[in-house]
Amino acid sequence: YLEGASWDTHKGCLTRQKPKVLIQELPVMKVIPIESHKLKLQNTYQCPVYVTSDRRNAMSVGLVFQADLSTHEHISKWVLQGVCLILNTD
Image 1 (cartoon, rainbow, N blue to C red):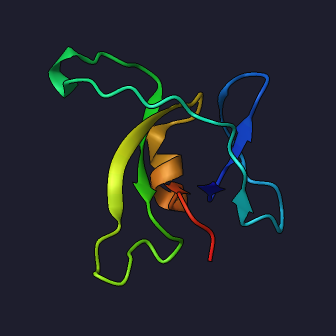
Image 2 (tube, one colour):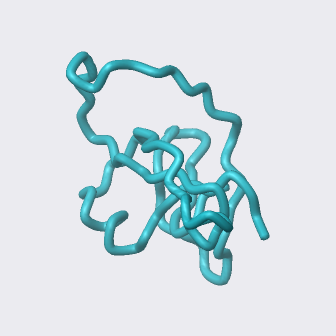
């Protein structure tokens, strides 16, 4: 699920969040592990992926990994809006 933003399926990038919609389903993502020094991406936001919307689980562990999501906006917009991916809704 995507929290704090919306996903444009036609452009394949982050877009402005619709009014009164807090969490949106995200299409299935393919996760490919790669060494960070081999990765050269532009116009992407390193979005944190958490287990729950509390951004932590019962053991105070929440961050799973960071997903690179395509965007046409400046990265600071998504950081200030607190955009993240969550694996489970409460």
